Length: 45
Image (cartoon, rainbow, N blue to C red; front, side, top):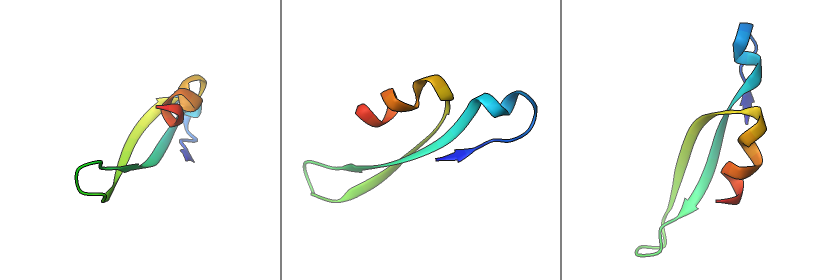
């Protein structure tokens, strides 16, 4: 998680999550810029 520190960006964070692919067993990285209120929801999916 990286916080954006300028202006209105303070309320958003860049989140990176590892996701396992069922078919191959490999891991992929999913990245998103998310409002701070929704960070927990991003990691629960």
